[in-house]
Image 1 (cartoon, rainbow, N blue to C red):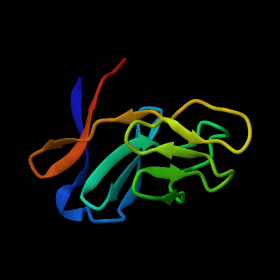
Image 2: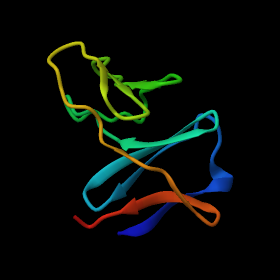
Image 3: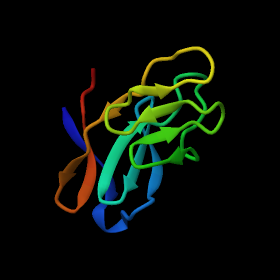
Image 4: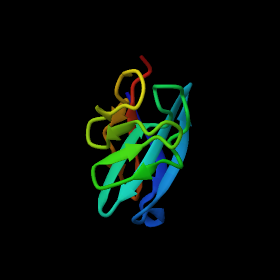
Length: 106
């Protein structure tokens, strides 16, 4: 396991969103108020990007079909068609002046 830096803390602000790629995984870093979340960047329903999704205090909504997921744990909150799995989430980690993720090669 190793720390992979994603962004400098000085660049983060309320409303921040940016997609990152690690290996073949697409991750979306979001800051909402003082909280930071690191989630799977694509909706598991049909793999549509969540980077333009509507974000509230506790969830993100896929702009394609309106599926809503918890920002805290990735669980599916609302589906508009067939059920799908929740989002993968990762713990946001800090090292010095950077925010990132501890990544396992598994």
